[in-house]
Image (cartoon, rainbow, N blue to C red; front, side):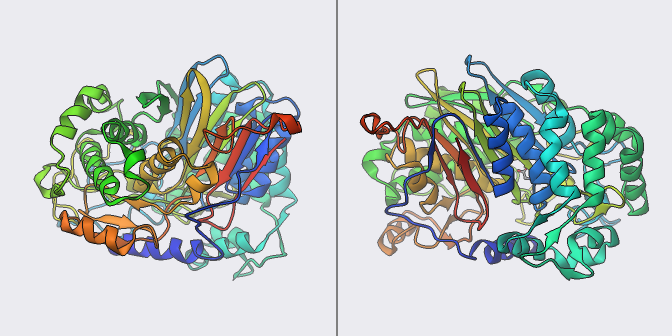
Amino acid sequence: MRAIKALIGLVSSLALTGAQIVTAAAPPPPGAENGMVVSAHRLATDAGVAVLKQGGNAVDAAIAVAYVLAVTFPEAGNIGGGGFMTIRLANGRSTFIDFRETAPAAATAMMYQDKAGNVVPLLSTRGHLSVGVPGTVAGLELARTKYGTRPRAPLMATAIALASKGFVLDQGDADFLAEGATDFAQDPASAAVFLNRGKPWRAGQRWVQADLGRTLQAVSARGNDGFYKGPVAASLAAASQAGGGIITAADLAGYKAVERKPIECDYRSFHIISAPPPSSGGVVLCETLNVLEGYPLAALGFHSAQGVHFTTEALRRSYRDRNLNLGDPDFVKFDTSRFTSKAYAAELRAGISADKATPSASLTGPGAAHEGKSTTHFSVVDKAGNAVSLTYTLNDWFGARVTAGGTGVLLNDEMDDFSAKPGFPNMYGLVEGTNNAIAPGKRPLSSMAPTIVTHDGALSMVIGTPGGSHIPTGVLQVMVNVIDHGMTLTEAVNAPRIHAQWLPDVIYYEKDALSADTMAVLMAKGHRLEQMDYWNQVAAILVGGPSLAMKPNAATGNRWRYFGAIDPRLPVGSVGGY
Ligand code: GLY
């Protein structure tokens, strides 16, 4: 619990800087005719738009964005972590690239417990023992070779230049980097990069990452072999060994990104394409939407007590199913089609009372594990209508907060997304499941939900967000705001959110999300309520108009097709297009 509180404090201090959430109205979403990129960093967005302008497709642009974020947004942008990429091609085919980190070969189920069987604080979140084998380079390369149109080198050139020659930090960059300063000071390899002679970098200073530039150059020249073999891999393995970690050169050489079938479902007249296991994101999203489809959310109104009640009850059940059942599909067996079926949603609805909250304790199963929320998402569409929704992460902000010396690669703490102690009471006094137990080569369960939505067979929305277990709820609410409540994309993204996840048995709400009388009705139904800080940074693109009902004014020559929104909950990020 303390760890979660500390994380919430960190993000709230970051997010509140300059953040302004607008409920009733918001500026219209910026539009573009030919292509669009929405990401957490202005330089990454610009690099993606430049690739689109030069005729690259959405996959090419996504690769450029991802490598630039690894330089300019080290909070979560990475080559030392992993993630997921949902792709929908203009010909209607969709696919999914899984480049989630894997547990090293020497990992064991009880590696984060002491002799008495207690989980050792920070062992799975700080330092080299918390690091999973990184997947980002392999994932981007798999996507590029199968679905891109450009050679690797030009797509990486901007990232290499930004690392080698540096870029001038703005206030948002500097404030964000400073958040890791205390931990960076403990790790000489991190201090050498992320601190300026021991002090936090300041706005206006040029930040050069020469080692990272050389590592990116090796990847540009040799592809996967530039990272997973040779001098970079040797440095990564040596840093792990020196720092008490267990990643070996063989773990790196053996890493493979995997192409999977996305999770798909229908919500009202829309088709959803999202992340399959080892992410729970698509399953939670589809299961919740299927249940909500049976309720008149539009008529109930945005954040009506009844609408929030039904949403909470749906989420209570889908998160229960997530925690009970899901894990790495290459290691454990479960049937996602049951959770995403309309018949199962009807069964769940039959157990939901309109008047009374279901106590979560009565829905038996294991409890929720801690999950880092400090991920980043970007959305890309190109002129032809190809779309990429990409979420990748180091888990916590700046991951394990250790850097492999000589490489500039900041490393993830994704091992913390496994259950550190399956079969025993967790921090909430409940028993965690074994499907997400640690095993060599296994991928930890995620909540990331890079999502693409179509309507009548045409691209409609590209959406995703960071936020750990708050990812599915962030994506869900923006979609419901657009589809059911008729909001423009910026209104939908800016609108205050709630969150519920089965355990703890609480409805969390952002400031001003619920009126006092709405809360009174919810409490009368038996819900417990608690205010939360911001968890998401939704990056979304809507196709066709600022809202589903609004169209650009063709009479004035407005030919915009794509409309973008970046969540104001973090003071960084941008929408770009041409
Ligand atoms: N580490 C955050 C997630 O995978 O959901």
